[in-house]
Image 1 (cartoon, helix red, strand yellow):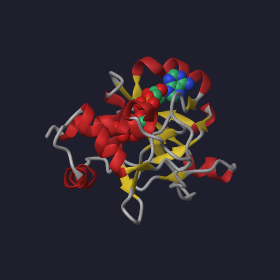
Image 2 (cartoon, helix red, strand yellow; image 1 turned 135 degrees about the horizontal axis):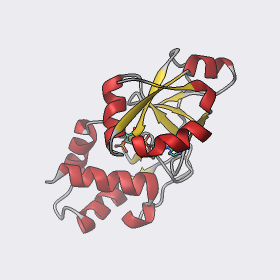
Image 3 (cartoon, protein in one colour; image 1 turned 180 degrees about the vertical axis):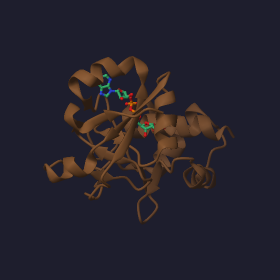
Image 4 (tube, rainbow, N blue to C red; image 1 turned 90 degrees about the vertical axis):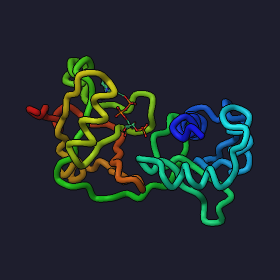
Length: 181
Ligand code: HQG
């Protein structure tokens, strides 16, 4: 089984385009496990089953997916573009967080700050390796340091996903500084 391809397909249908998996996703991001397995069988892996899905969920390198307590539903932990509320806990952030991006975006970011683009939130990380890896996806990486503590004191709400990604609706320019890395 090509786990990476299945995982990519799952992020696409669970975060962005449920119709591509003939699925419905509820207001909290949950989709029916059996329907997802059927979709993966049709589109990617004819022999896919629950054990294979358990394996994809358990071994995903960013722990992108969770089951409901009864195991009948599944959702992406974060990263959606469709409007869902995955009931993330509001969490007090550390004094600083990081955002990795591509050099091609910095002129715009320096003018307008970070905004959520096609996703529901701006994604932030707490370590430099992750920020760099996120940035490299967009070309030459650039890392911003975000004054998250000051933002929280100014009333911004931060959420922490189960896999350690920090989320916030936007980051105005005054809370950003480019790191020399
Ligand atoms: C940039 C992956 C111009 C922003 C990763 C980013 C992450 C602006 C890009 C997760 C801007 C959006 C999210 C502005 C923001 N002007 N560019 N005003 N504001 N941008 O992919 O943060 O594998 O939607 O800097 O690991 O790169 O999907 O966000 O470069 O955790 O689980 O617009 O996706 O995780 O790109 O990545 P993305 P991201 P998964």
